Amino acid sequence: MPLVRAELLGRLKSMQTTPLPIDFAALTELMGGNHDGVCSLLEMFVSELLADLTASTIAIEANDRTTLQQIAHRLKGTSANLTALMLSATASELEQSCKEADDPQLLASHQKMIEQGTRLREAIAHWLDSASPTNESETDFSS
Image (tube, rainbow, N blue to C red; front, side):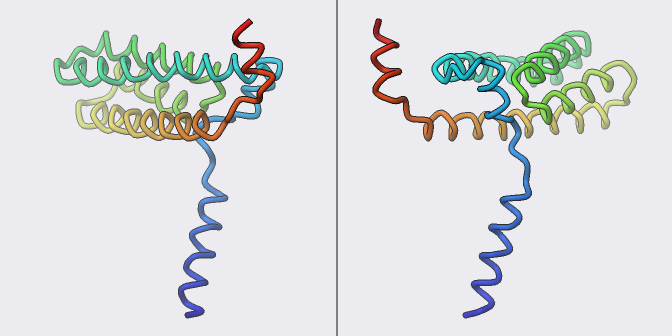
């Protein structure tokens, strides 16, 4: 039985040390504490992120480095602005790979960006689900 407890504590510790793919507190602060604004912004971002990830897969399958580089550049900037720095760094790596890497490195960079984008989408979905609006913000939202 103590082994199970130790295993659970180990998992909990690793979850606590794994950084979130986005800094929700910093983003909320950047938005002046406007929780509803953050929610709206993140919902729009997730929609655009899905479109960009799909378009990037189409571009990589077509070996269209120009389009892939443009998508990576866009994701690098938008994710950095939203404090999603891990996706921003991965997109930057893909952008650079479009310019100079061989196909295996390009594919690896793309896969890494897809994984980071998916992780970010999941984190945002969880945050949006757990962030319940207060009665005041619901009233403000309807006015």
